[in-house]
Length: 190
Ligand SMILES: Cc1cc2nc3c(=O)[nH]c(=O)nc-3n(C[C@H](O)[C@H](O)[C@H](O)COP(=O)(O)O)c2cc1C
Image (cartoon, rainbow, N blue to C red):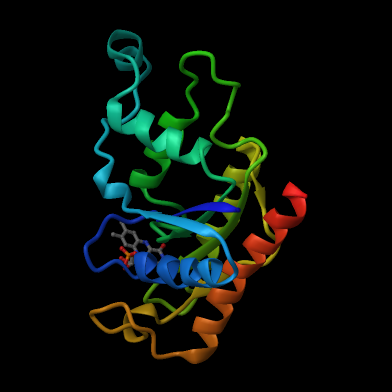
């Protein structure tokens, strides 16, 4: 069975990116995947510093996040757009997980994986600009990124407090992206 890790680049309690990624995750589950949804905020790790790494090794939470990446075939990622880029929370976790420990293959968390990327913003562009750099980052790490992606604009008005979405077209597109990731991984796994 295809295993997918789903997470948002925001730890905010009421994060619209968490809501967006949950809908794509539902699409992936309906397509037959086993989906693990995590909250990056639960993985408390210091800002990456090579001195700290040399002195103390990899923080427990960073190792746990890296192992989750390693143990899943693909990723559903929805990122907030902070000043046209991804959040520090997201990039810090990605940096820690790029570090090798034990007898792991280099970049084991990223190489050979497939990702579908999304963004959500209250603004009119829906985080379109972060998708450009997020795609570049993931591809450079060795993760294939699906050509299809989704930027959700006006996202604050689209969800209620429970994460229910009012826009049917967006819901369909997000679920379809989740399904596309499952279909692609199923083909790749043979
Ligand atoms: C430091 C900072 C920079 C931001 N820059 C952008 C931006 O460049 N483009 C944008 O659409 N929204 C920007 N925003 C607004 C975010 O889209 C908004 O806070 C959004 O709710 C974050 O996603 P979340 O709900 O998943 O936490 C910024 C917010 C912060 C805190």
